[in-house]
Image (cartoon, rainbow, N blue to C red; front, side, top):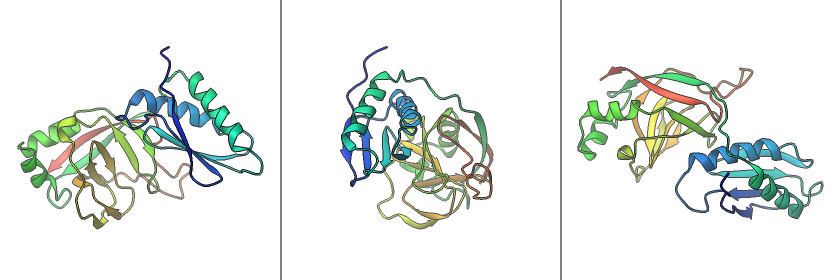
Length: 221
């Protein structure tokens, strides 16, 4: 096993420790797998209240009265070095997508800016097997790695106030799905009827880190 890069640790207040596993480098699925392992191990430490995996980073929320920050730092660094980066065994899900038209108001402009046909954009967007790298930002929102690099697009300069629930979106080098109607500057290519978040379900967030997603085109407008 190759030695991992040393993570960067910083405090976000007296009871939160942030680990940056990529140290400013581009997103890495291998680093993300190590983040998942670290989150699972550290959350069982006495005094840790919550572990929140992000994209190549991990926020550990702890009670500073119970757990000294320096002790947590050592535990985090040791666990990081010991992690072997094995991927989580998640499920593979097919997500139906209605592309274009009212469901994907940005699709035509997106294709024009990429000098591609709408059909090529859809084919490239639906081709990868995406990985749910992290769940967060809003309840049930999935940050997906695996987007075709040719589809990377800067976010809108003026975010929309309300991107509809179920919108299938692209922002920067990432893909995502809106679990609720909320503001966003990501580009809307389509929509799915799949419910990503339901507080009444045993597991409110439909997807979990390590799951894989395939987008399946159902219709194009």
